[in-house]
Length: 564
Image (cartoon, rainbow, N blue to C red; front, side, top):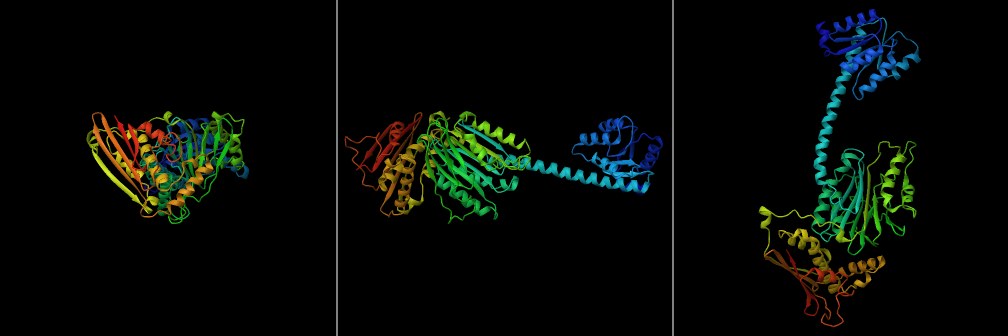
């Protein structure tokens, strides 16, 4: 007896049989094997005892009053859920169809009458091993889920979604599993605009999400410092190419929105066609993929070749990953691009398009489990002043002891003008002044406009009058790239910055000189409000600065920005 008991742990076994003699025989055998016995003489009592005591194993007679064994088994299995409750039918049945009905009801095995102690013992041991294995798997699964939840908390703190709480943004993020293979990142630029990264990594879950962590750090770090989309895309591609295994990559759309100039810069690589929809006219502009996904090409072969789109005040940008059009129903049909793009017909209610897409995709799928990550983003054009100010963490303690009194000179010549953007470095230096970060939009605008005027118009002699249309933008940047490759060592831009404290804030003095021929700024025909040599942004610069003007032959500009 001791040897038999040692082969398995003591179990609680429910015997459900209306025959008193059969119950007595089974009770004796089971107790001799070292297990605890509870008894029921009909199916209803068996169900009640299961709910009350949760036995480890059930010996169930097929034919019983009040509720037969098959019905009781079906109900017990429903209540058990993921818990393993082996049920062995006690039967003298020999008909194959009747035996199959027992299995269909949830039975796991049969024990034929008359009962054989050795066979019953073997079956109990076998199902005890199965229960123990299931418990181990469940414990491992629970441990894995806890680990994944902890990892996801860390992951979310790094690969966060940034500025998705802006009033002109609506979004859907619905991952297929705990980790999301889609990436949706939105960041405010120091200039006041918005940069968007919507990506879709190969695969699903944790393996697909791993690449999002370094990607997010690069994206938010570089945007905060004032880097443009070209540098961000180039660095992300380089990083993903170096860390991802062969066959894993990130399809992506990168968009930089300037609300002040009403333009967007777009780079597309591998995602489905996205759209810009005009709420007033119903016109649709398509954002079509033009490049390979990020992480495929080496740094030497990667090309950043964006396109520019002029935006209307009523334009709305819609971006989505392929999980939306590839949603399937119970007939294995895909929702498809045609159904999705039909949402943007001219009869569509503009403010309801986002909700309509979400609702119709869910209805099409019949609310089945997702077969991919679902990501959808809507961004409306607004006036820049309608957006909240860029967050300023404030200054206190040691942080308040940052650089307040300083000056610096910086010069770029020849090839460096073509290969290096100094704005992130200059912006970072200025933002080190305690309390100045909340004014980063204004400061960046001043630096960016003055530097780009010195380079584009002073050194490269480009005419900003070209920027009157999307085609003009494209020609402007084509000429810029062409002339940047022709620079020599004598061509340069010099930047002088100086910051001083004042009683309630500070004064930032900026002077930028270029090697160009300049222009006659003393002429009566000179007007900052016209386009041409001065560019369309200088009237804004003058409105932000306490002092502004040109020196020398017009190739030196100075500005003074006071803040409190």
